[in-house]
Length: 108
Image (cartoon, rainbow, N blue to C red; front, side, top):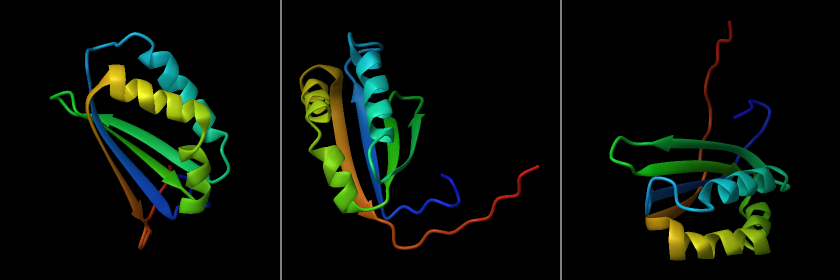
């Protein structure tokens, strides 16, 4: 996350896909990330996968109000529906307000 950007909300999206490479998943995931990055209030995105196949995406937003536009985006809602119907055997979403954020970075 860029040091000059501030995030007030973080979304933790845990999931397990139905198969290794479900049809249409990759293209939709790429489209959703591009689309989210273009939304006002989007701060950053990271994705991690565990050895057992569980995955977590961490998405930071400036505010819950700005994140709401993403939640209500028609194309995003389609991706969510397809995820429930086709792509995920499990998912869980947590939305949290950032209480404190600080750090240190020493670039070479």
